[in-house]
Length: 263
Ligand SMILES: Nc1ncnc2c1ncn2[C@@H]1O[C@H](COP(=O)(O)OP(=O)(O)O)[C@@H](O)[C@H]1O
Ligand SMILES: [Mg+2]
Image 1: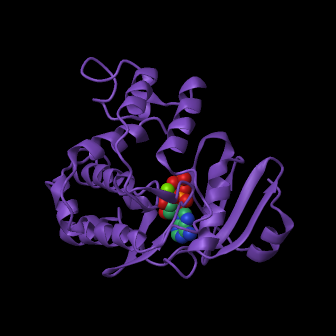
Image 2: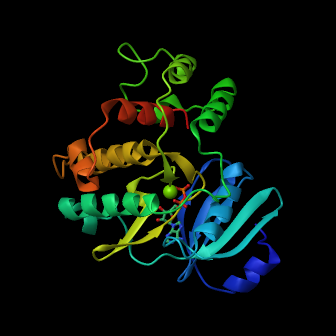
């Protein structure tokens, strides 16, 4: 694949490691100091670039070097964030620290004033519209959902879940949200958050959008889902809400966790 000229110039002849390969040709290439994300065009690639620019100076985010569309792909060249993902073993072996860091990250997001935020697709009305499109076009991957969401004790299908989400909308308590606030998207160095990455769903939304995804991510990183069944720690959702200094909201936690099943 031929890279856009300004990107080829910026990286020169450096070698890279491919971090992840997604559907339809998306790829993340990690260089020594830079990261190149190649994706099919989508609102998310653009949001990621716009939010990386807007959040500069407000939160630790990658510096955007180049964002361009060529040959049917978007190319995002950005700085490589220092530190390690919160899902690295270094952090998972210190459960108290990783919970505190996740809470720190979420609280840092809350400090940002969203009034002039350029991205608005994160509000619930817009998310439900996007979910509707995904359901109508068969884009929901049921194999990639929690076992209890669909089936005998859950929803029959994505259509039924979408209908439930539309009729059970909780009131929104708006803050800046990351939108996919899972441990691989939060970086830390020592005892401090060093970067928020993967900003394609970021924008104003209810604070439980991030809390619910962070809880799910902490649960699955600790319960053995990603470590061949070896349980690392008995995580309870209230450990995160206590670190955040708020009460556990069972209804919103369930709602935003279910909403994410359609994405
Ligand atoms: N700016 C960055 N700095 C350091 N690592 C990154 C950066 N961007 C991506 N990565 C690495 O690549 C992984 C995948 O990139 P990400 O942007 O999260 O895409 P996706 O989750 O959609 O595949 C991340 O979890 C991280 O390990
Ligand atoms: Mg990611």
